[in-house]
Image (tube, rainbow, N blue to C red):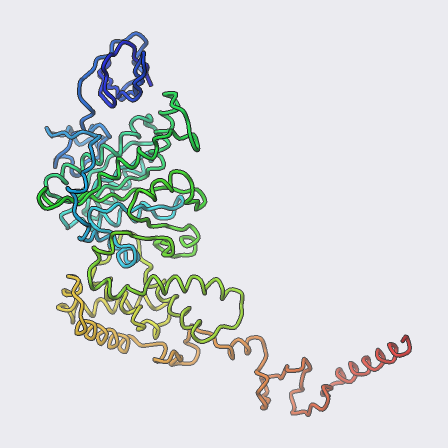
Length: 550
């Protein structure tokens, strides 16, 4: 932070020129001085140095030359691959397009993640928040989206704010291993950088994406994460003596993120029809989505994907809480086939989560509740997915239809993934025309009938565990435990049973029968040994003592 005196007529956010190739950015315009933040070797600046106005705002290098590179927010390379040979620049701060310049979000931005594409679909030009605690898979969702769009006409910009440089290098290696780095720009503001660099990082990444947007292309910007961006802005504002507000953030912290995320847009056809999709990431503390920064960004974006730590630790990957995850505009961009097969998926999963908590009390459940729980377990297993392995749209539709259509009810939960592997191999080899139609989003009665028949045949060849009524086909292979089996485990039989066998005992009145058949007269039972008679004699003595005392 520097205080510059005597700099008249300076503009807000104007670039300043200082000695030793240090650049300044004017943030505070006061009556007798200008408060500026410094980029570069700021420790060489001394009191009394001369500062000059440049007359222009901060410009960021842009262009195709940045693809496959790791750069800092000022466009300087960090990967050691040489200088950037780009001559084009764009302003870091740029006014978002107005209403007339936009068109509705109608084209899907496929993530390759079944749980997202089916229930919280994202469209090109949308702003979808990814929110969750630390280490719940937020960055993995973003990387899966980049990898899934590597062969599409989408350029990805990954902005790493306040992360370790080792993590940034690991991200670059992951994208390279999956042939996605050639279509990606990584903007890195590591944790050891000064606050002004972290503050400028998302605006620089957005400017790089706008280069493709205003040339009729499609760009995807991922801001990982805006919580650290707000931390950096709070640090700068406090040093500039701006008055603190809630949680010590300055009063314009909402505008900090809104002016960034409003630049995500789907332009109308007259302006080229390009799109810029934003996936901001917010880190919460102990799942508190009601904190200041999370509520701000939730209100700015068009929906949120909430990743829950409890689900993550229980083995649900991705750990998406479908109850509070929502996409406000992406539904219009969802393909017809996915919209048809996934219509009831969110409702059935929400019902399963409610009944799952209720069933833990151990009370007896009716048949409908057991069926809902059984279906829910299979849907959860269906939506589980390995990291960095996005699914094609046709595979997603076929797999989800097998769950919502009730076909998976005949398969044991632990065999669902194995069944899907064999099903998709079969469909790709024998029903390629059908899969092409599903990939294009087509859906009608004939497609549904053909897909249902193919799934039924696959189940018959794979080997079903249950019949169509839910009864196990072979003894002991069911993953459902009936009431009778529970009673066997507890060493009891039902009270309506009249036949005694050698391995069952009657416990209706709490008194035991012998291995031989015996009659029960008045609740007192005889056995081969004298234990029952001793107990009855003790009872007679107790009654006599009670009578005498009374």
